[in-house]
Image 1 (cartoon, rainbow, N blue to C red):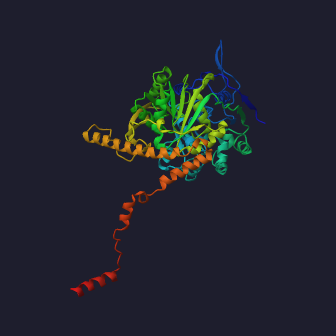
Image 2 (cartoon, helix red, strand yellow):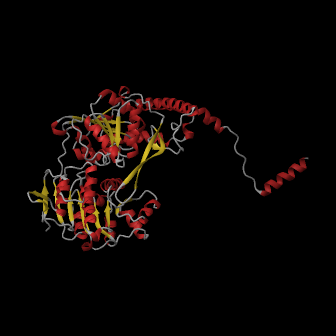
Image 3 (cartoon, rainbow, N blue to C red):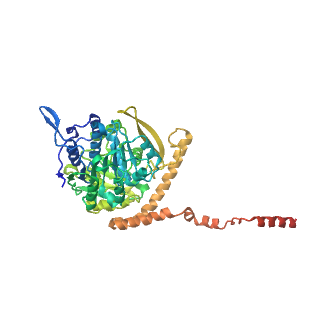
Length: 554
């Protein structure tokens, strides 16, 4: 039986380990100071702990650098940084591993992207390239990453096996294999794919395998037995979910009305400090810029924000210069704001654990806080898992007309920025800022236009901006008024989750299924039906007969 370590939260810093200086620099800039339980246990087992004594710092002898690991840990406990630090440190310090590769398997595209972003942050000063490989997108960009000799491969089982089968991805040169959230892979039906993966990777004695799972079911144990060799088992006690001290409010709102409702909430509540969470980097930047257009002083942080700007934003938030911050879950990790009065979920998180991590920021050290969630037709289906996780139903309220505020950014195009890190050499990277296409507010989707009408300063562009903004604002106001009346007729707060989702499904299926013809005014539909029918197509014989008939008439 493998040894099982069960631990509780203890203070230990990353500087307590003898890590490579370039890796430690990336950890410091990421804002990671104190180890979370899973990070402490994994890293200390692999590398040992630095013992500070009068004779200097020496690593303890109780370490097992290449031993397989089987870790039971909940989502959002910092396990991503734990296995990434192990991989980077061994590749940097062991000459035989410097040019080898690591394969990290994740059950979903979203988790693969999060791991990729965190890997890029931690490896900012390292010579290793990271790439994500998942379905739903084209193969060209991912195949280019493989040609560029990417060393940290993060992917979902289906796409990884496809690339391997086509000969584009060679998995026999990996020295590290990580299976993240193994229990979710079973729930999503990936077990056959994982069995196939065993046949295309090096044998267990030629790689280090780290398996992470939130539960210890029979399937996971069987997979651990197949994938690992004498693994060291670590069990992290689950975090106690405590949300009693937090006032939670849920609003059901159409996606195009989220910004007016957010502005109304901020106007009514006037929080001393607040974090607004979004699920995507693009939406995070758009929401922050729209808030600025409406007179609010705020900033945003995303995963690929230049480190200098990121640190400046964090310092301004902690010092109180900025009262409002818009952030993604990944970018907000390691960010601790004292006496945070409010958290607003502009997007419902796709992970139930992330909901608790978000709202838990408002009730630190026994204090009370307030958490408001805006749920639309796009993310309402995430709520049942969250309510099961916290063990109760989130109190919902109906957004009345007085809860909304006028949105000065309605109808305008929001020009977002794109940040690229181009390596000057093997150690330093230069961040360049590029403008991306404009985004029209209200839909938060990328437009197909060539540029933003706000980019120039000509009279034509100003006229276009003023006319379109007034027209779009009036249209959105009338649509909002109609939908608000329709929503008010149903008391959603008294309905179950299934009934609430049924109401929204019925409501939005009607709006999306209506065709232009059916939505046209009756008079137009009648007139279109009275038009002369199109002449029938005639064959060659009919045409010849018509010609002869004309000649006879003449």
